Image 1: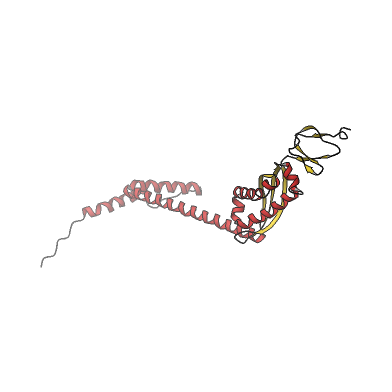
Image 2: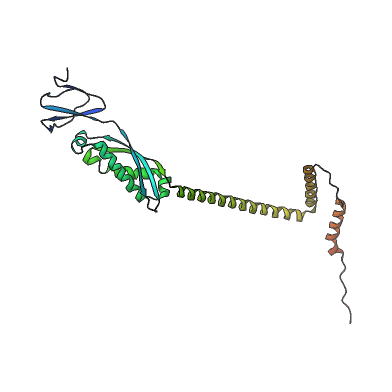
Amino acid sequence: MAGVFGFKIVTQFERGVVFRWGRVLPGVREPGLTWVNPFADRIRKVNMQIVAAAVPAQEAITRDNVTLKVDAVVYYRVVDPVKAIINVQNYAYAVSQVAQTSLRSVIGQSDMDQLLSERDKVNAHLKDVIDAPTEQPWGIRVERVEVKDVSLPESMKRSMSRQAEAERERRARVISADGEYQASKKLAQAAAVMAADPAALQLRLLQTVVEVAAEKNSTLVMPIPVELLRFFDRTAQNAPLNATPKTPATA
């Protein structure tokens, strides 16, 4: 009954644009109860909420000649209800078409690695590309754009898998070589210490014997006593000192 007398209700998330005899009246109707002439005026309500629009997967070729399928989602809202109604017939459909063409354009300007690893930069660039033709002429502001999924061909997936496996193998070899290098340095230092102190060599020999016997759960018998080895070692060290020089032969 209220509509018959020209009373309309504009909800909180809407704005009303009034047409009188086909011409838009200046200003917009704010939320609440409003009155329009039931004989000459017609009100059109515009939703001001943020709309999440899915962008269908677009197949395009990247800058490094890789064919990809990329889909995204666009978050936009109306900032000027008059422009959104007058300047474009169906702003939701128009934004969807601009998003699809812009997505293909951004894919063609980007490398595959950039699409996979630098999503933030791609999203920011895509937002600027979509927002440029929509905000000023249509009154639509793009709040955010997110790339959801990047689909790679099976051949490219296998190539990337082999590349990742080769990279892991390379790192494993580098770590192993570095470990062997550090171990060789420590062994060289240990050999120098043992050469300077023969008793350290004897202790190391006994330690090795104990470890082997514990591991094999057996008893080892040394064929040569350790004291005899020490005697030979002292004899070898004193031999150059006790040797008498030879006298030259006389003619």
